[in-house]
Image 1 (cartoon, one colour):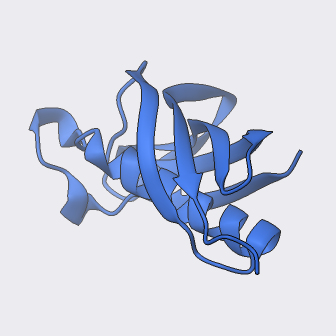
Image 2 (cartoon, one colour):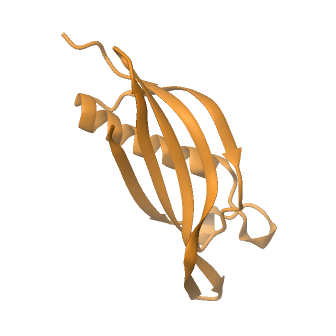
Amino acid sequence: MITVTHRRYVPYAHAHYAGNLVDGAYSLGLFGDVATEICIRLDGDEGLFASYDDVQFKAPVRAGDVLEISGTVTKTGTRSRKIAFEVRVVCRGTGGSAAEVLPEPIVATTAVGTVVVPAKP
């Protein structure tokens, strides 16, 4: 099975709530980016996101975080690929421009999704 991992800094401009919290849709957008790379690597096509089977918000994502976003293909159909996703917080802002590398990543969001790709000729 293939796994793709991206890293992303969360800019303060993306904070929507008190405490510099970022909305859950931010993680879902990052899952889409990882799924796109997976489809390109496996099928030579960007593919299309079809559905989510399960999304769980387990810990907050905040502006100033550095996220590690992974997707692993768990099942391959003729045109579909089922992918297990995870967002982990690996660094966190501590105020102003200060930040720290976390001793252990925090799992913030998990999901299972399905993407589809064009039929092979």
